[in-house]
Length: 603
Image 1 (cartoon, one colour):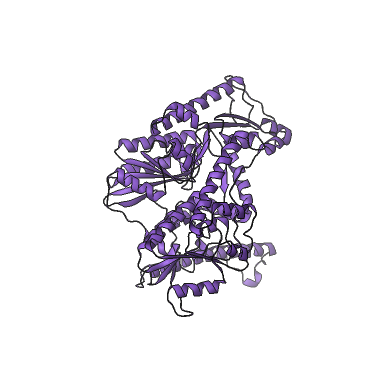
Image 2 (image 1 turned 90 degrees about the vertical axis):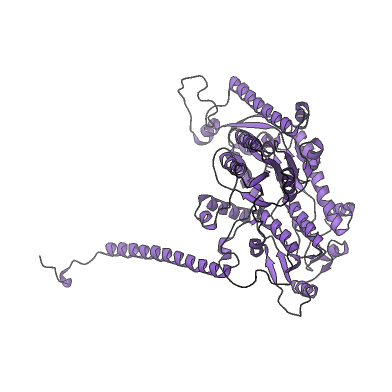
């Protein structure tokens, strides 16, 4: 049949034309987006390659290492191929404590680095992490290079770090937020009651306060006792460090904190909290004078992100392996943002099966989690020692409860004075949603079962009966008994002594050393040095486990997307983020737990 001429064709309907245009536009947009994405990647990678192959010297002479610490500080940094390029802000990564420490140590021996400029207003880190950085800055001063600090205003954590400087400056409208330390605990009993949720709790340990948020609306007398002692000890360390650097008595610092005297810049200068008041331009001119530069001359400054690739510790024929274990302790496999038993055991195994590794440092920064997972990791440490490797634990902000469980059988333990450790105790939380479902949603549950207790501990079902409760209590007691035996054997202590200092009580690193739970107070570098000493190494390198994921693997991973969401929530919610985090922790509890219930917030 002959084709009809155009003017004889049936006109296209309006709806058909509309959808043709819509789908055509969608296809065009998708194609253009994909093309633009890959084109941008190629351009960016080309820029990165060009920068990496540049013949320009890595660090110019007469340079300053500028430290700002604007983002979150995590145990390990992440590689970012777009750092120091126009694309850097689109691929921001957390600052790693490992990178900070490596850069400060390298700068001390780098003839091109003349000193450090601390320009820190606010720092997001816990107290032992701050101490780790501060100790590294103190060691840097042995190189007889300068450290100066400037900020328009200082948060308490920023001031603690910056007080190590030779001189400190601030703006005329600034202040120092020096007010003391505080534990903040969140209690969910009121929420649980309103939701008609039944929560049955079994614990061992008078001081095992991790369950209190689900059964009380304020601290128990025992918990208040332990936290009062803890916060006083931590503040004493905090204040003493500032006192030693600024030559201000601890008593004077307590008066300043108690009377909130540091709210005005002029008063801060009068109280010797800072050495001078100036604008940022004046501080830059001050640095030019120190560097003997002409007026308006460019100051050669490098950052942690730019300098870290030149400061990385190299591997050698003989090495100490650092195995990182940070976050909540969970069973099975998972991401690299928390501790998962299978993942961590695999990394420990890689370390002790590596012929180039003679000793292992287990870097623990964890408030605990699953008791089962902790036992699996404890056993892997035993296998590492059986393979002839010396194992030293380095404790960060936390190494408590499950975090202490996985540390206790090391050959040697190093903690910061303000590390939170111990908390030898376990608990179980069994929620029942039956009443809530009926009263709030009108949902009822019925069951047919083959045996009397087939529907026990299902979560949404009924509360535990008397027999089930007794069995759970026996189970908890058995795990606690195993935990205490692990500690007694690993630390060469009597069972009676472990029971006495256990009961779920949290100790500072200072007290833990007195009680025999810790061998030495110090930083991760001290732990590495001790591991090398035990393995009789003099010339050694460092190998870190697990291997860091490259940027593009993280970019397309579900874990990284979830991490970005968490970081965005933290930024948007501010102090309320801890509310969200606490409720999220409640929903994730399963099995027998050995964990801490609180955060030490330093603002």
